Image (cartoon, rainbow, N blue to C red; front, side, top):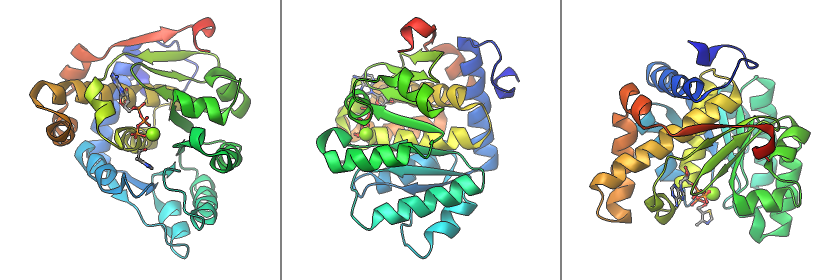
Length: 268
Ligand SMILES: Nc1ncnc2c1ncn2[C@@H]1O[C@H](COP(=O)(O)OP(=O)(O)OP(=O)(O)O)[C@@H](O)[C@H]1O
Ligand SMILES: Cc1ncsc1CCO
Ligand SMILES: [Mg+2]
């Protein structure tokens, strides 16, 4: 299982496909619990997406419970989509607990491009070195103005994933481009948020972070392509996407994943 070997190995599209297959099997067998501090728009869909892939969601943000929940979870998602004031301290406590327990955590800096105070807070959180930062291009631009994903990843020692029509993942030196996905994914709110939660589930089952993130994005994109075949619009697509996550097979991944290795020049 080359995908589960330590980082530093030669990277290839096959590495990612193998990690997607192994990660999917591990999530379904081990049922990792992912604690999600996420926005009020995305909560129910995110919990359903985690269940569809085989993981277990927990979602509380209660200040007196967050350390217990985050510290005993297999991974932590921090999503800033509806950043009510009391969440700032809750997020700090959750990161302490997850990082203290040696668990991966992922930052999704939603809408930092719309709010300078939120961008400032997101930069503070990013300085805590999340395992992965996942965002759309506008959000990465606001989080690290003038820097670009590869420089951001290199400076923090984290993995940065930029999602959109094509997805790119980098550790600052190397990277992957994932071409899977469907335009209907941009017509349902919280697709990125739910995808970040599923990416956290892949991080929690053991592949190195850049490979695990690329694997998760291939899974998410391929599920989107499968769902689009039967959907008649955004509403039925949202439901079909959950079914597609549940039904995805190792063979479908081998046939359908569209991954390219990025060299240092094009990882920026
Ligand atoms: N036009 C597109 N074609 C193919 N895939 C897409 C397209 N737009 C988005 N996606 C896919 O949808 C997922 C969500 O990415 P997106 O960049 O839209 O997230 P986001 O902006 O954070 O969304 P949200 O904030 O609504 O959760 C990614 O896996 C991405 O690959
Ligand atoms: C629409 C919306 N507003 C805050 S969070 C969110 C979900 C998509 O990120
Ligand atoms: Mg988003």
